[in-house]
Length: 315
Image (tube, rainbow, N blue to C red; front, side, top):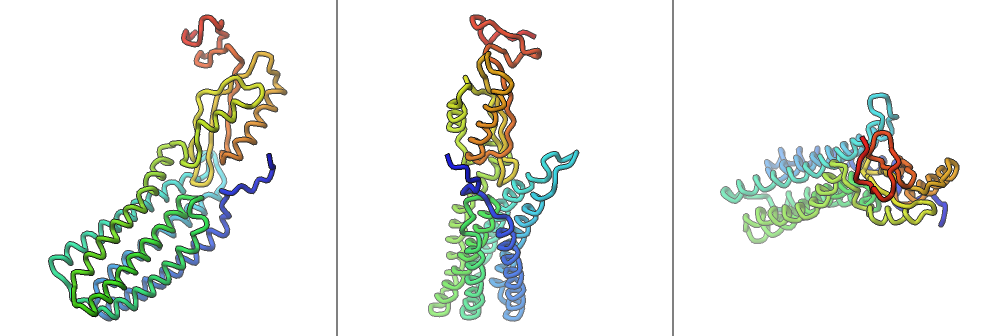
């Protein structure tokens, strides 16, 4: 077993922060361009797209803020520091994407009943700048998107926006040549479906972490089997695995060892298990050891004879 502790799922937070800052600056600049062009050309499409892009900036700021909070040291009131804010940020991000979807739908229904004469050319030009900016920002997050939910959220926001911009370009060009103004609306519906599909897993995973569920990349049965294979361990129970943040996980468990197990041996066993768990992406581990035949549910851990079994609690 290799002892290199640069595991494949570790995030380089400095690189990630840099990518987020670049993304925030680029997208803010684009929002200003769109607002200006929207007012200048009186284009509602551009103004609503600017609003949508601004929700991206918020998403990026949320992710950046969450990562910065990761660095804050634990204190007496927050013994884990503010790690969990990363989970909240991911959840809010998923919800923001769905709110954006709602806004696009609302807008499109309005459009459907009062088709707007869209200036195809202008819209297409500005939107193609959007494709470039969102595409570039999405690319910044591509390599880390499966390692962390906030990066995934940022990536999805950018991809969603890139699709919106692409849709605007395509419908702008179709309208330019055909004058079918309804294309604009149909395009927005297609985009909505695509955004919902991509956001669903982000929403599911962040709710799961928020409820202290077992993180998606960890299989609790595999972990249990690996622990049970360690020499000296008879069985494992009361296992809990949960996410402290979107990057770190914690676990508690009760281990049953045989009666002859000394304190020194127990320490060796614990060390071995913690090493195994580190490779499973579980960094914060609390283990309680019990000797075979103890009944852990009794307050004073009365020794129970084997025949009597573990069901008669001695209170």
